[in-house]
Amino acid sequence: MPDAVIAIDDLSKTYASGFEALKHVSLEIERGEILALLGPNGAGKTTLISIVCGIVTPSDGTVTVGGHDIVRDYRESRKMIGLVPQELTTDAFETVWATVSHSRGLFGKKPDPGHLEKVLRELSLWDKKDSKIMQLSGGMKRRVMIAKALSHEPEVLFLDEPTAGVDVELRKDMWAMIRRLRAAGTTIILTTHYIAEAEEMADRIGIIQHGELVLVEDKAELMRKLGKKQLTLTLQERLDTLPELLQPYALELAPDGESLVYTYDAQGERSGISGLLADLGSAGVRFRDLRTSESSLEDIFVSLVRDAS
Amino acid sequence: MNVEAIKAIYRFEMARTFRTPLQSLISPVISTSLYFVVFGAAIGSRITEIEGVSYGAFILPGLIMLMILTQSVANGSFGIYFPKFLGTIYELLSAPVSSFETVVGYVGAAATKSLILGILVLVTAWFFVPIRIDHPVWMLAFLVLTAITFSLVGFIIGIWAKGMEQLQTVPLLIITPLTFLGGTFYSLSVLPPFWQAVSLFNPVVYLISGFRWAFYGIADVDISISVAATLGFLAICLAIVSWMFRTGYRLKS
Image 1 (cartoon, rainbow over the protein chains, first blue to last red):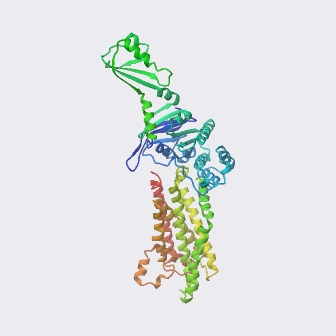
Image 2 (cartoon, helix red, strand yellow):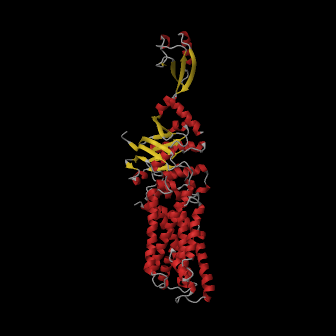
Image 3 (cartoon, chains in turn brown, blue):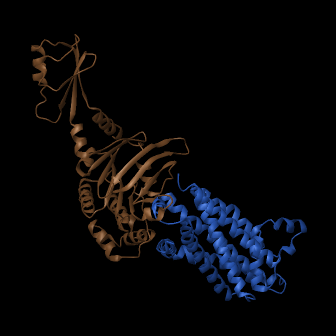
């Protein structure tokens, strides 16, 4: 990938407790894309983000942001990044304006009230700019954290569970904001539990489980794969070849000849199962057992969602 | 050098101070002033002069040191402990800010606040006790160095502390006793030889002695030792802080 804005190479993290949060993760993130990282709690999503942002020290491996190594060249790499962490952590007594100005300064940018005003207006925070943060609602605080992350005009934005515990309206606002940022060329990496959110927003989807990047795939491709189900028939008698009558079905005969696998589109209007079963009868193929299963990707997805809920 | 970040941290910390002027500025000045009003004016009239200095004036340098020490430690520790406690530290850790810049911002602000308080007490004292400053440049140097050193001590405590109790324990159980026993209220020469020797293990003795010398030219220990000790403490604190940042001690996992 020639235009990778973030290159993660063989990244591992073992915490002092001995817990291996990340195991040899390699990932390239393209400039301008929206990448959704899916995974259950404790899978390593936040650790991955925290390492790229400089909050957690990697045990092994390298990360570059815009070609700058995050350890050796941390100033350049961090300047490019805005981070919105999962937890709502804000100062209580500061005003919105003060905290956003503070963030911009920390990232080495000269004051620019015009930019801050634009950010606050886009997040519907402008009329709250002189309010103390503790007077704001949870949703507003979340917006403040996003405003802080955008205060220094980052090229890459990390959103760790941006819509966890957020009401529908704010979620829609946030999605709209993410689209605007992306249109302006910002690369966005978001973690989420919600497949719907990934489906709605992302260009690519990465799945992390037990500290490993299980897969990274184009969303459209993934959704196509996820849409597949399989019907497995255990036969009463071995088959050497498929009967002529069954050829139209995309059936797979197991190498041992004792089972047939029928893959179909679960989202299609007709699965073709009843036709297949009728034709099996006509062809004289009898089966002892049948079971349906979702493809392995969906297995992962479903288990992810189950763990997350 | 990320100057904007230093400015941002410094401003943020100073804003915290001036948001609560009563607690941050007025009350330390009043409580310290009470010492020299009570000890100096009420009791001091019954105590003979110490080496030609009235008792109220004699205790002033020690009282200023007492306040500089406790305020520096309190400010230095709170400034960094609070973001850690609230979780807002994530932003500092993810910002393109070096450890040096972080220390300059936080410790600079804590030391500034202590200095403001020290000067306020000095000015207040002027109304109550006869003060003379023989070596104003040294006086300022001791004031600044001590404020920086003990703001660093506070900063170290703030990073080290895992809870509010630890945060309070060190100032209350270590700093305050050391200061009271460090010759604020008496000259070491009035102590029996054994306790004089013990006192020399108290680092605060050197700070107070040097500071008092800057006012009245009288000292419990030689001024060069005081200067060396002050610089030594500063060096030790700097070494600990740089080790903490290098290893990410209690800041990063």
